[in-house]
Amino acid sequence: MASVNLAELNHELNRRKRSMNAFFGTRFLLLCITALLTAHLEAGAAENWRQFRGDDGSGISSNDKVPLVVDPKQDALWRTETPGQGWSSPVSDGKVIWMTAAEVTEATEQQRADALRGVSMAGMKDVAGGVELLAIAIDAATGKLLHRVDLGPVDQPKPIHPMNGYASPTPAISGNRVVMDFGQYGTWCLDVQTGEVIWKRKLIVDDSVGPGSSPVIFRDTVILTRDGMDQQYVEALRLSDGNSVWKTQRPPINASNGEYRKSYSTPLLVEVAGVTQAVVPGAQWCVAYNAETGEEIWKVDHADGFSVTPMPTYANGRVIFSTGFMRANLYAIDPTGAGNVTDTHVSWVAGRGGSRMASMVHDGNQLYSVSDDGILTALRLEDGSQVYRTRLGGKFSASLFRVGDQVWLANHSGEATVFRCGSEFEKVGEYSFDEQVMASPIVIGDDLLIRTSAAIYRFSSRN
Image (cartoon, rainbow, N blue to C red; front, side):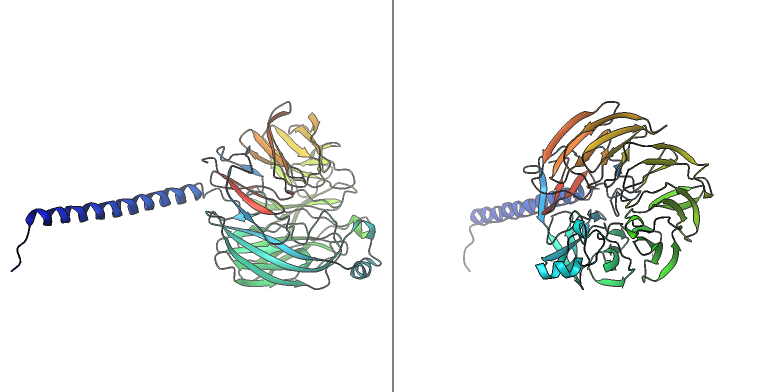
């Protein structure tokens, strides 16, 4: 029997013990770091932006930790380049980010001539040779591309405005479903995790310059606005199967020219006296519908406004909306009325300060609005009177976004400005993406997500 050196054996056992301790210690440390990182990335999951302008449609974050002044070149937690073109804002359930896009083929001169022949206002419109519609899913924690869902080609794409695109409406998420709307080209419902298509519908109207209105989800229905040149209605589809739940025609419009009958606003859901109203501005009329039944509750005649794009806002018991083109007036409405309340429930009208593209934001005392040519206006919520006006420069489509007492906005060139709420314009910071910005920001936990024409960025307050 071989002799055993007990000292050497003990030394070897101790060495192996130290090695195992080091291994498990390192592994434990890595697990802790991973857990902490995941917890940070998913923190604040209660405030996820599952539809345009957030779950309540306000464009306001309740989390004052969200950073608004950032350096796009250095501060991004991650940056992910996105395929195709799309002006839709991203949406997220805190784990997965979804957005729409379109891969566009340039039209030949012959295709352009054929598509624009006989088209109203052809000189102000553009056309694509081919369009492939996409749904894109990104991992919120890492920025990794999870799904690129090819929804199919567009047969004979219709002309659009050069500043619009074929993927402008923002998706909406509810539970394990995400709804992608492309206007007359179709509405798709996908599984949030897998990207599998659950159902598809087509609600076709002649939108003239491309799709714009985003879907909103109320309980188990998807509410869609279809304000075209040829017909105007609001319809709710069942989220489970896409079947129609209700469909309500818009009030008669005085304009005979179809261009003055179209609009692109997204419904705002507001609870009044226990009833959820879907408030939808459009050409000539702003109408509130019972979100459950589609029944018209009240309406206001705002005269000859059309192409209304900004989403309404709700502040201090008043619904505030812009009348769009040609002159963007602002109306504040007491939503407790019934029927035609034009003469009874209009709290105030402001002839200056309205937006034709970007949606507004408020701070409880003042309303902030930016015109498409870069004039920022602050108005008193109490009576619509002007507090100040200042020219920022550039063209604007992305909606204003507020965190605490600061407001973010960005022009088409990707130049972002952050200012403080108050009686005077006070700039807090500014920076540039060097990429076009048309989409509105969203929040995940303590973090800010911004989509540009080329990529999507995530900025953390804890970088």
